[in-house]
Image 1 (tube, rainbow, N blue to C red):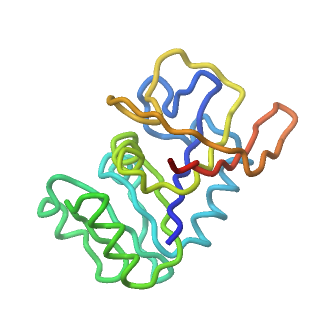
Image 2: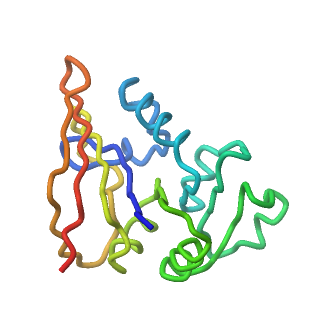
Length: 175
């Protein structure tokens, strides 16, 4: 199963504007269209509870949304079998479960803690990163605390507007 981490970032590496979790308020419509297309094509989507709470996703029979949280019982009333699930499984357990179910791809969409946990366990195969030509100075980072040493190889880079928004795809070079 291919696991893809997808994010949008400023040129100074911020994935939130001054801590505001709503990326759509500052990212280009080209990035938003791209993200929507990738989302719609994905059967299995993983996110953290902070990402879900910032912009709750509507249930859809076309997607299995997995929300990682330390307190899945808190969200029991929001679960919909086969569409929205809350779990406190580790990234390794989660990946193994869906790999054994025959899923070909898992899209990891946020947040920083979830991204870091997948990267630490070397479970990410590709990083799809949109660079917006902005600098915020203060904001959230792609990953949180901890030391990582991950090498990437560029697969593709596309300039999608006159401002210089770049949609890039990188392979994670496994050691």
